[in-house]
Length: 121
Image (cartoon, rainbow, N blue to C red; front, side):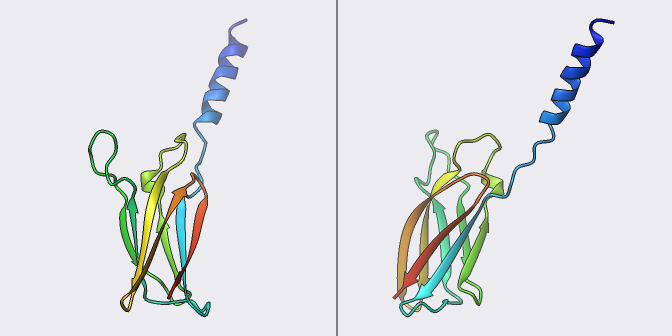
């Protein structure tokens, strides 16, 4: 009888802890031209920095998307984020269109929509 309550409490805590749901980890890249107009059809490449981890194996971050009519490229990063991990990755973003290019880096934070804006001119 005296062990029933602690066992019940332990089972309750374990079941609540296993129900934790993570929020989406994503990257939104906004590309505008020099006059501030959204630039559709630009190629956006996202790669991990450095391209290898300390064990020498390649990172799984190598994505390419074209911007939509609003000048936005969206990348879902849930596949590279493990719950409980502090930070996700540092990525390099390269944008190209019509012979013009620009690049930058961003430190992706876990369980948030990371945003970065670029001006291609």
